[in-house]
Amino acid sequence: MGPKSTRVYETIREWITTGKLGPGEKLPSERTMAADLDIGRTALRQVLARLSSERLIVAYGRSSYRVVGGVSVETPPEGESWQIHGSRTIYDNRWVSLDLVDVEPPGVERFEHHVVRLHHVAVSAVLDDDDRVLMLWRYRFVPERWGWELPGGIVDEGEDPRTTALRETEEETGWRPRSLDHVVTYQPMVGMVDSPHEIFAGRGADLVGEPTDVEEAGHVEWVPLRDIPGLMADGKLMGSGTLVGLLHLLANSPTSVR
Image (spheres, rainbow, N blue to C red):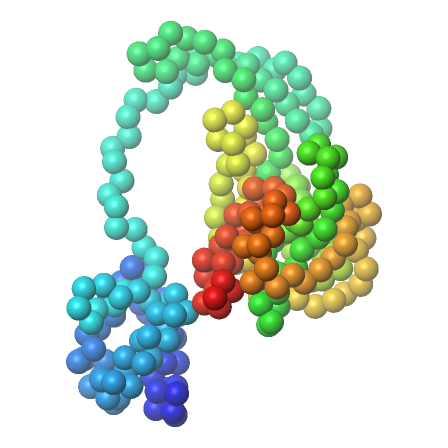
């Protein structure tokens, strides 16, 4: 792109990254942007095509664009909740507890439902400037296999999950992320297990030393993001937090799966 197109690209991109145009919001018409930004329609369309390829905007209708994101579906009304009549703990230690909860779903007889309670977890997906993601190659004895994982760990009581994500990344890899943004909080097995997982993503990290968490350490590698679909197909990725974090990176990368 020439200087004028680059200026317009940076301007529209700034509208999006600063929140002037929010997720799902409509961009001005091509006619309006061409006039306000002093650019020809053909050059403007090249700019919009680049922003679209970077998944910052999406085309809809005829020559119309919206910022990626937002929600178009209406939230249905909430139905009747299950009644909880009580619970009893069957097993409990510092890592896991098992409860039997006396529940009554609407229109169903009461019964006892198993609930496994685990820790609150934070996971980091960190990219470098070459679109490589910081990962660990480790052995997990429960599935009895080796695989790639994102760094992460347990959120200490009263600790901010972002602090956990930063700390665990440094302890497990020796790299300190320059920044991390929250992506999503989810439950990995919502029907029976209570274990909130927080996913964070960032770009850039500084090597500050060797890994200090011996128990959680593995082979540290900056893995090209373009390799992730192949590793996924080969079953080389372990853990839901790893998959959620990597899928987020892939969904927001314009070049990783080209």
